[in-house]
Structure formats: C-alpha cells, structure tokens
Image (tube, rainbow, N blue to C red; front, side, top):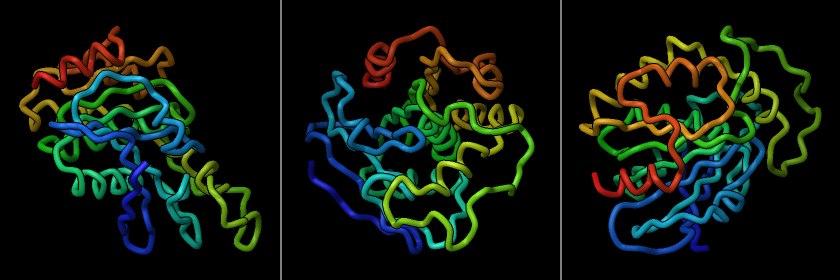
Length: 217
C-alpha cells in the first residue's frame, strides 16, 4: 500500500492508499484497537481509489504524549484525511462507524455517504462524560500501537443520543443526498437507535448495496 503521512498538530497520521481508481474516493475508518490494515481486507466493489486511515494512537500513526483521546479528536483525524483525498464516501467499523457518522454531519459537502458497520468500540461509554482512567503518567506507555490510553478513553467516550441526532440532521441538511447515512449494524447502542429513527438514515441495508447507492450520487 502507498502511504501518505499527514500532520494533525503534533500527531503524524498514516493514510494508506489500498488501491488506485478513477472517480470519487472511498475512505475506510477502523474500529477501536484496530488499524487500516484490517480495513484494507474488506472486499467491496468501488471504482474510485480506496484509502484507509490509521487514527491517532493506532496502526502507523503516532501516539500523543499524554493521552487525551476523544471521538472529536478522531473526527479531526478524518477531516485531515478528507482534506487530502477530497470528496469521499466513508465506511467506518465500530468506533470508526461513529467517527464516519460524525464527520458526515460536520463535513457534509465532503462526505458523500457514510456507511456504519459493527465492530469494536461501536457502543462507547455512558451518556455522561467521565475523566476516570486506570493508566497514570509513566505507566503502561510502550510507544507501540494501539495506545493503551486510546483503548480506555475511547471505550468510555460519551455518546448522548441527542448529540448524535444533531449530527444526523446536519448531514441531511448539508449534503444534498436524500439518505446520507447507511446503518448496517446489528448491534444497536442508544446512539444507533436514536439515529435509526431520523429521516435520511437508511437501515436494513448491506455494505455493498449502500456503496452502490452512494456511487451514483
């Protein structure tokens, strides 16, 4: 895979070109504790170039010195990747599904459809934020990925349903696509249940069927 290194403040992000193509890009976002290498094994029919991003603290991307992970930090990772590859359809697995959903609302003109897949980190934590952690400074910091702080902090990241419905509405109003979100997940934490009820969210659909729809918009 061809790899491009991008800068997100002090973090170096690894963005991998899984395969070249012609037309709009497809961007893969991996699950909690996973990497772009895992996502690159997904078999999909897509004419354009296919890219896969390693989030901060995962894969070949670097690790922040003091933790401080949140879904919004990873959303900024995805934003930087989109600024490099341009308009794209985004496929996320687990935690990456949540980030794909957020970036669809935050950057609706760049994201031409977001497909959400089951995977690690889909559920997140309670709906109330917490700063509690078992890892202290100077503790289990090996410098290798996945970063233990990422695994703890991101698994506890709060996802209030009212917060997610706001992003669903932003995606619908800003994208110009009738149904900019496709939910293939079988697991349904509260945030997924909340967006399933929103206009503009496709449910009971497969990954490939969703991609076929988005390839045509």
